[in-house]
Image (tube, rainbow, N blue to C red; front, side, top):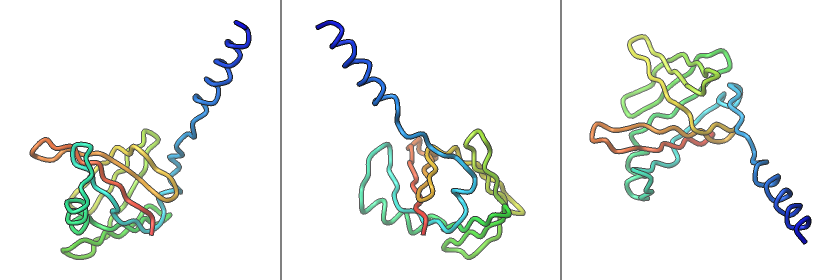
Length: 128
């Protein structure tokens, strides 16, 4: 009986530890992206998320490391780099922003940031 129990535990642990690993391949980020969800301090509120999405830029990442950001103020060219440390850097002529990605697939990327009021935002972008 002990051997059956140990075998069952070993098989169970094998399935649990075989979670799909994220692919942070730079090729996954190429394409057009739009903000699809915002959580504040881990809580999703549909109205707040919808209003905040309007202010979030849309991104178009090109294979050559260039891109275009579109926001409520206009359209801006940028360059981008996705490092092996899962850090996405977006640079314009006057500014550079870095984002520590938590998830990157061929259809979604997620990062967290903190507001000036110490609220943690979880920002999700979906590929268009």
